[in-house]
Amino acid sequence: MRISRIALPPLAALSVLAVTAPAEAATAHRKLLVELREEGGFAGLRNRVAVYTDGCTVLSRRTGPTVRRCLTAAEWRGLRGSLKHLRLGRSQSRPPGADFIAYRLAYKGHRATRYTLPPTWQPVVSRLEKVLVKYSAPK
Image 1 (tube, helix red, strand yellow):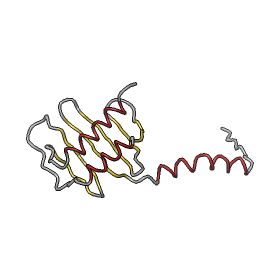
Image 2 (tube, rainbow, N blue to C red):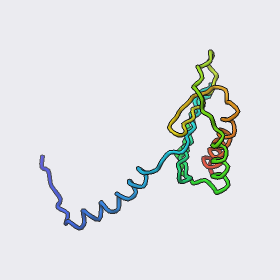
Image 3 (cartoon, rainbow, N blue to C red):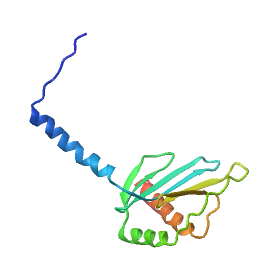
Image 4 (cartoon, rainbow, N blue to C red):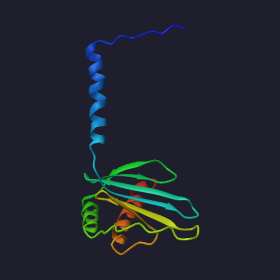
């Protein structure tokens, strides 16, 4: 078995690094603002909406591709307004039975899981679900 090496001129190697490094760096520095995960139920729901501080999102469902979109100005303002009133509180114990949906919210370094939505969670979850439906729907 023979192993060959390809020698690249120094400038060619640097140009490859220059093309890939900024994209990776931009992704690494994004800061998460809020994340919603919905999981469970008989249908095997598995949704995720992550919104970053730049107003862009990463959306995923159990089926389908991961989608990246940025919120409109109105969606961004509405979400930030709802987040001002959000109180995560403590996680709720899993109720007995099989057909429950777990709502997991992460915000400001805290996480909580609920099976029934408290009043301060409802506007946030509603807005995030609308974003998921709007941007992850096939076009």
